[in-house]
Amino acid sequence: DELTSRLVAASIQAVPDGTQYPVIRYGSNVTSDVFAESVSLDRLASATQSAQIRSGSQHNPTAVQPAGIDRRSVQELRERLLSEANVLVCTLSGSGAALIGNIPHTFQVVIVDEAAQAHEIETLIPLQYCCRKLILVGDPRQLPATVLSTYAGKFGLNRSMFERLESVIQPVMLTEQYRMHPELVVSFTT
Image 1 (cartoon, rainbow, N blue to C red):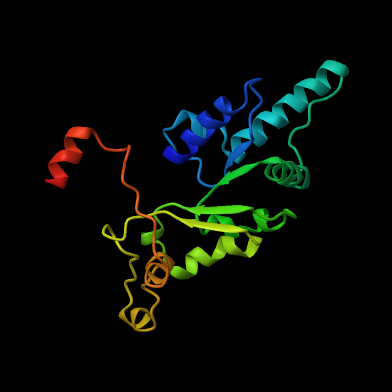
Image 2: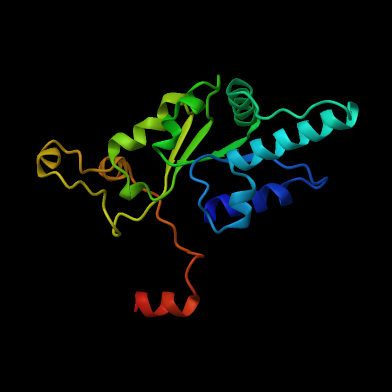
């Protein structure tokens, strides 16, 4: 949600005329972040449906309002909103949802946050969309990818793609962080 919030804020500031780059958050609607909630697919679809109903009743005030909107039109609306998005924020498993797979598109860039904690197999899911660049962001000194099964661990399923690539490609280490209060940074680094 923090990432979504910052992306929404950046898209608002990115263009001088106020035009936004559509950001959509796909997944659970449970969030306390106002920006993230405002761009959730369900919220955007609901708002669009409400606007369409209001617009229809203004053109024909005697028309009977539909008791419900058929599932196919809801699905088509959700697919249209996703296809118009420039940025899609979702979990790795969410990127494998049938709804996202139905959209004829490729992603130019896939950014995986907390990649050191993601299982290698999970990281492969969004790669089905033929991205040109994969950016893995994470701290290998924090929590690793967790697998409860020792049997799965024997086959390397407890390893992250971040860990695998770090062993063959020189990673880029960031020198500044912006999430922690400066006083905390000093106490942890000394």
